[in-house]
Length: 112
Ligand code: 5GP
Image (cartoon, rainbow, N blue to C red):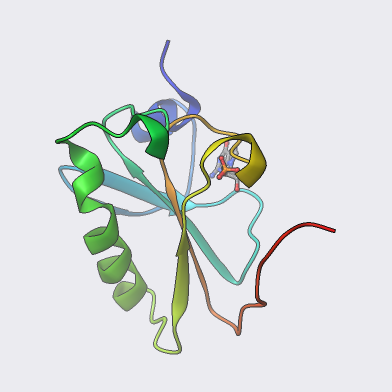
């Protein structure tokens, strides 16, 4: 069955898509944690970092993050996060990177 993010990529579920190329699609997070919060998703369905294949669309994630950050004017800096598994709070099991920016970002660490 297609993942939620594949359904967004295939335009079956609406999303605010900000970037796409042959390898990745990027759209704004439905519950943004920063003024800019974009999810960058490889077209290929990969469950997460722990299941990374040797080759595939995931190899283009970081380059896409750089390009999107430039396009969205994140000149002050930004953060790229990948949540892997339960301890990181991964909720969608289709590999994705969070691109966060648009304001100074707090530090992160262990939840109290
Ligand atoms: P994770 O916790 O797996 O690293 O991140 C999943 C992200 O997907 C969350 O930040 C959540 O807000 C976002 N999300 C979940 N469902 C949807 C949706 O239907 N549309 C969009 N645009 N984002 C979603």
